[in-house]
Image (cartoon, rainbow, N blue to C red; front, side, top):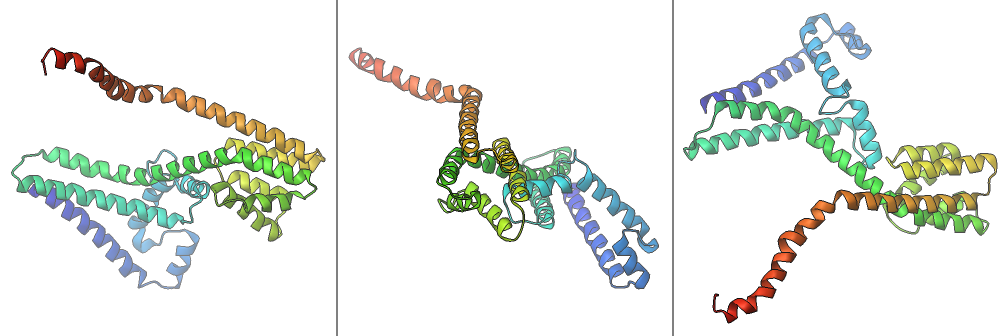
Amino acid sequence: MTVVIAVFVGLTLSFGIILLYQWRASTKRNLAQTVVAHVGIAPSSSKFLANFERTLHRVVAHSPQSPWGSDRQLVSLVAKSGQDRSLKNIRTSQLATVLAAFAAVTMWSVLRQVTHHSHSTVVVAVLFVAAVPLGGWSVKSSLETAVRNRAEAINAALPGALELLAFSVSAGEPISSGMKRVAQRGDGVLNLAIRQTITRLESGTSMSDSLKSLGRSVDSAQLTRAVHAIDLALERGTPLADVLRAQASDARAAHARDLMILAGKKETAMLLPVVFLILPMIVMVAIYPGLVALKVM
């Protein structure tokens, strides 16, 4: 237990000393050091710390295999999840998760020691080490889940939105007016994405660029395919209403296929309540009168 507390206190003091040293160095900068900080060259007075920070940043922020996720991966996930968060906010959340994991492991060790339950120091050390990658991975995993949920919600609402847009275009409205009509029909994820596209159009962005931005903002193959078909129809002069109806039919069929695939994956999980809950109750209801008649119960 003493070793665990010493390790935790040592890590905390180390981080504190590094932060104090950096703050002290930042308050005493001359003109050359200030300029060097903006061009990305490490000053000679803190070469060791600069190399350490550069290596850590390269491992954490630039490696695609990093459990924390690279900067590019996190920025892409935040954009596709529809959240208004910065990269700095994500990194702060990952660091806070790691610190919370450290505190939880320390509290668990203290409680085990207070209640006179022995535990291995190696186990505690492994938990401390595992908290670093798992803490950053948990935040990244939550972003990936948000991206999947947003894509599923958009795929579910896409056929109806395309049908309504096809009706509007068939009635003689331009596609921009039809998109506004679709966006005003609800407050779903797809409606909000279309509203953002309309905002880009009103700010002067071309229809082609606005549609491409809409396709890139969501991790949905169905929406990307529909946006590409609409862009080609506008470019080549193809009847837009027919294209929209065809894309709505394809999106509805793709959504049905996704549901069938999901049902196939969940087949075993769907059998668990039947086997362990429903069937035992049916058997008990069937044999209970006989057991009562035999006075077994």
